Image (cartoon, rainbow, N blue to C red; front, side):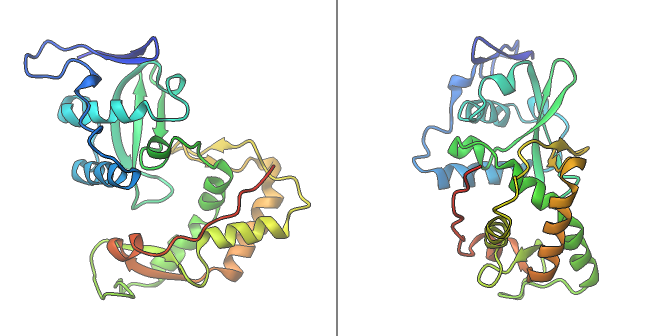
Amino acid sequence: MNNIIEDTEIIITTKKKNDVKNCEHDRISKFKTQSSLKNYFREIIDKIGVCDSIQSKYPNEFLDFCEVFKRHSDYPEKFIGLTDIKINYNPEFKNQLVVYIIKNNGEIDNVSVLNNCISGKPKDYLKIAMRVSIQPQIDEYKNNNHIRVCELCGEHNRIEIDHHSVKTPFNKLYNDFISINSSQKLPNTFDDTQGHIKCFREIDNNFQEKWIEYHKENAILRMLCRACNGSQPKYKINKLLY
């Protein structure tokens, strides 16, 4: 099965009689809200888990991904040359599964299926780089707490590290730090980690170090199961102009 994006459409060809021949197969149009669509793809990603070829092993889900890619803010440019999709753990956030597209030139790029492809909004690269830079603190907290149990319900499975959603949600820390440093020009171009995640450039080391220290002094972390973590109230961040 050969798959490419051509003339702003994802073209699927196949020799198997029972395979869907194009993305008009569309099983996602039935979802009327962004929340239900997001939950659908979260369940798909969790069901598949680590997989080096969605195209060959999960052909129907492959077509679902192709269809939702059309909602991405950088469609079709980002997806030109797509030949396959894979899922692997994020090298920086090690318990998080990430969807990657594989292109015919060998390039591999991550896709924000649960955010950009649902809302159509571009990624906030500054926030992503800030998350990456404090990941060692998250790992240290996790490694120093060997008894892993949800603080709210007592569950022992699928434990995640949470920025306390009432006291110090990540978005509040982010917003407050940016406000404190409003006189400083914010980083607006970024490097990529080995896992294709945006990170700070060396030229922005001063900003990064200030943020790391601020987070260390102010963040309150806790352990929650995935269900409790996902049900926590969301802090609404102020829109930043830069």
